[in-house]
Image 1: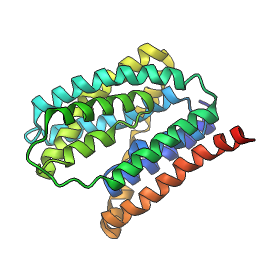
Image 2 (image 1 turned 120 degrees about the vertical axis):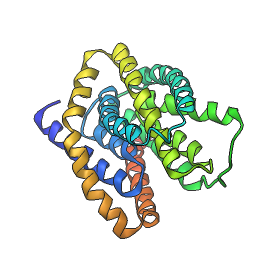
Image 3 (image 1 turned 135 degrees about the horizontal axis):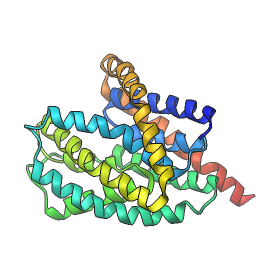
Length: 253
């Protein structure tokens, strides 16, 4: 990446950190399509996003280690890692498309994820059938390998349980902390050393992630999470549709 792309990527990372801190989710949902839009290749986007999330996840898992269901987190990591392999196969096919088509694919995925997040309102239960865990963990891995947006399936599955908030957050932090190194390692094997350079850039961007978090947290407290979620869903849909429309118009033309 050139210096202008690095500056823009840093701005995206900061804004995504603010969004996640304000509403509690959405880091990859915001940053993936915007990083693609400024010209970062999709494998590099995934590596950069994953690395920015890793340190936060490690810190969160350490702070909440007493609340983490470790056996479940290890099982989720194992299943998720298998899903990552399938996602990388799909990424290889998407990576052969031109830039507009790639953005359109990510835009469609983003719109679908936002729709599911908006509609999904399960009544929390004590336990769920193991098959739901298999679907959620493998879908999370597949999306992580394909586009870096593997969080929503895990979030939806964990929040469908009547767990205390610390247990939910601890499970998510621990799973991501264990799964992300596997994801980046498999990604580098599939797409080479450029992925590792992007991962290094993600480490360099960590101060910007924390700056965004420092801005987003008081914003979320001031406006209220539900109102901010509604705004975030609208913005994400605009981003997703904006990624799809140019490819559709070119195809029709």
